[in-house]
Length: 82
Image (cartoon, rainbow, N blue to C red):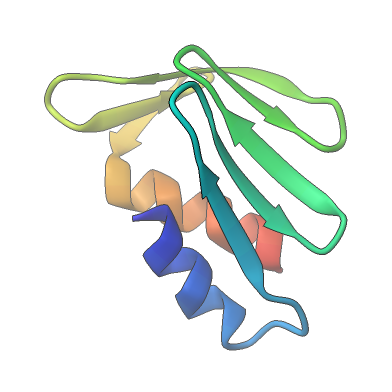
C-alpha cells in the first residue's frame, strides 16, 4: 500500500519516493526526508518517534490513532510528498 500511494502522490511532486523493505524495517525516502517503520515505532527524519503497530485485522495504530492500513499509508505518503 505504501508503494502504491507513494507512486500516486509522486505524480504531483518534484521528487520521487523510494520504499525500502527489509526484514526488520520499512523506510520511505523522498529527497532528504524519510520515515522508518519498525514493529513498534515510526521514526521521521525530523527526529519524531511515534508508537506504531499493525493488528491482525489489518488496522494500523500510529500514536493514539487507529485506522485501516490503506488510509494510514496514504496519509504518510501524502505528508512526505507534499
